[in-house]
Length: 305
View 1 (cartoon, rainbow, N blue to C red):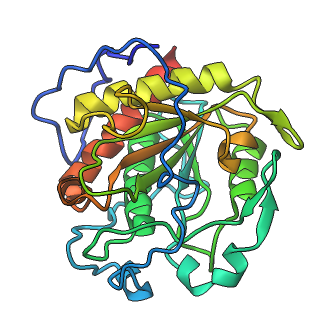
View 2: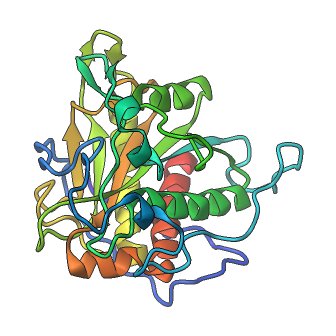
């Protein structure tokens, strides 16, 4: 499946605008490649001394403007009317900044349909200590604001408002119970230096236990291709050079968040936090805004058909 290369929707009153749209790469297939061993539902406990619990603080060195300041509409405040009015999007910020303080709880095994896996993990970080969980929350806040401006109802699986988790099975359940039109799980990878670029993880055809992705494989692949195409255009980042065979798309059957979903869902690994060049992007607030814009444009393109 080629990247979607349609023109993104016109934005109004965005805090940051991309100076020029980059030409989307035109690639032809959704790869069913095996995932990188470093690209997991959780990246495991990061052994870097700089990735301590204190590194999760909002004042982490090397990271800028970790959150947006504009408040979301209250539950009773009507959303603006727009092209996504009537649509529900669930955003799943990968990991939780306080998972490190609850290793016993997050190591508990949960059912992922085809087996059992840890409830959640700590995620990774840059070498300077900017935690993935902080990155994912920041990008998720930006993405929520962009989608709400187009009229979408947006829910987050968590908002740094619980001591740990939610567990991966609960993350899937939140999207299912919301009857979401789209679920996007935001992540950043923790791979080797020299491994660069983004990739979008798609659900494989899985049926076993409580998992049956047969109804969402095709729609999720469409969603992933559209996000990938717009991510290239907006951020200028190339598809991963180590996962997905250059397509920026990777299909996996070992992620509970995908296996247990009954609605279209993908994971977006925005870059490799362990590579200095990618880390420089991930810790830049203006690039994080572009990442959110790329995802928002891809989601909107998918929802508009």
